[in-house]
Length: 187
Length: 187
Image (cartoon, rainbow over all chains, first blue to last red; front, top):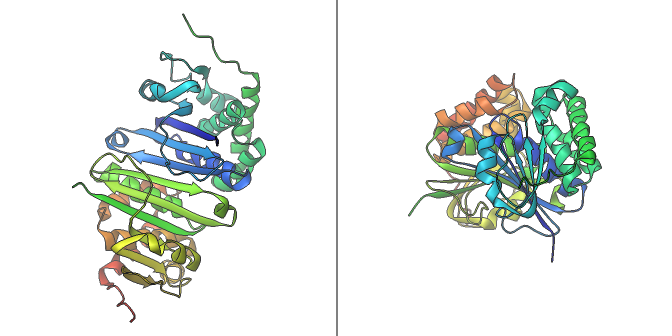
């Protein structure tokens, strides 16, 4: 069976989730040797400020570009976390920004709570790089794209002049992922 | 039957087709009262520099976010034009950048050839705004989103500091669309 890996990046508008998705997709397809799609859906919730970006990575051409059974969910807000946790497959990964998400939803997944926004602010020095800290964490935890491919894609894709700071944010996330262990299920 | 309108923006990398797609999707969903998806697929052709961005606009939630029967195709390169013209539905619209695309593919569609890149360069003063000239043309020809919604989305989405020039490019495309008639089929 061929690989199909589904990632959803969720939170609110202005958090750079679309850019993060593009970097993951382009890393997989342009630099690693895979196929990828990246998409966003907008509906009434977009008017309320919710944002959602999806990436599918596959060994093969992707016929159905919508995530239905998530391997990886990133949630930047409690609302997004609560809404989407059910879409995770068994043993999927739920990564939340613990700066915002304080309540773990029930379910059979690997759970990582990381103060992503705080790390962007304090360790990198720029809160807006939280999306790239998240990309580093996703690359490190999922191993679905190579770090070098992600760095190449990042360099091409982030606004000119912000490459260095975004790379630093990415690397911070990547390093952190090495040391993380999923939190045990509270029983 | 509910509305489903499929747009594909095709060309090569670096032409801002993803941004153009985002503006159309966000105009439809965030400012007009519709649903929209925006997506891109990357495969081996992305390594060759080809780029493709899709937007689907609907009255209703969108289950299948992949374009299969195009209402509107924008082609910035001859290769993209030749590859995708067959995906247009009968009486769909094919808009090409005549700066690059010189050969009209066969088919039963409304054909518009506009020197989009040249207009961006000469009338707006910045070649990189060709994508926004194209958005203006698409909005004007398709009427699928309102100009005011497109302007709102553009203002939010383009890089800070480039709002005015991109708005100007958009308005140029919009004005042009008013005066265009499809080219008659060569027989």
